[in-house]
Image 1 (cartoon, rainbow, N blue to C red):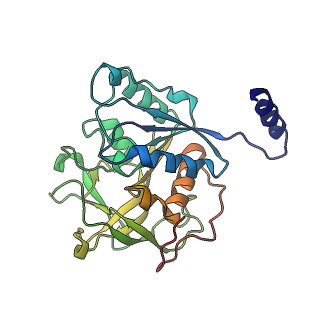
Image 2: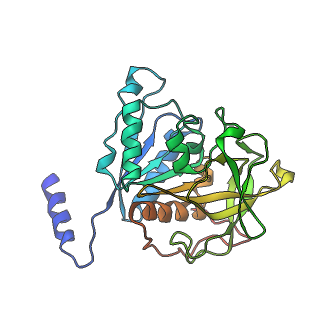
Image 3: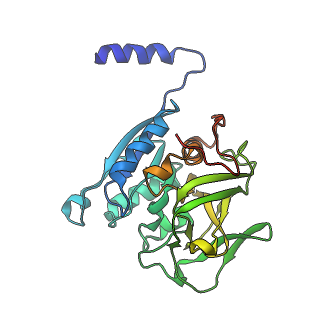
Length: 287
């Protein structure tokens, strides 16, 4: 059977325009969200494009010697997808991760991944903004949108918050960016946690889309960044605050931006078409 698959792979590689799938690694194993349910959803969404070959590295629980020995071979992959929010990795693993991204590797941070590693400065620079887990005013500014442009809001206040889950509209702020090109100006995301009051270094960051965090749902009353890209060294980072759980991940908007953001992080371009069932400004679309 392995010989058959190898033969088919070789035959396909001879077809005009054929390209091998991009090696992709999802990192999970610790999270205050249900990573055991969401990792398979993201893996399936990425593989459905035919562009990605996805492995999973599952970190052990706790903070003992097993986690100290957690050392994925990042260099094997074109892009890493973080579905991790947990204990700090070893110094060796952190160094390898930093060198991977700074050297040109791609990184995608999904939802609670931006809660991770509040004391790891390089990681916080990679994701631009984060929340919870001891972050405070010294962590950086809030990243928001005001008067038609990005705002680094340095006012004092808490770090990391969401109101009650509800559907909300995302507004495109960088329509020419490869991830956003062709997407509607506004689209309605399925019921999800809307992250607000997120702080960080926010260096080399581009806001792709924002959402008004409506006070009637417990929000900040500000246009909060929800989709962000960041340059870190030679690396490209796509940060999405969307995707609290499986139901939110059924949104075609989440699926599409995850697929496009992962391709961009890996290659710097997006070749995927916008699906016909992409959400409208007034209508959620689920798969």
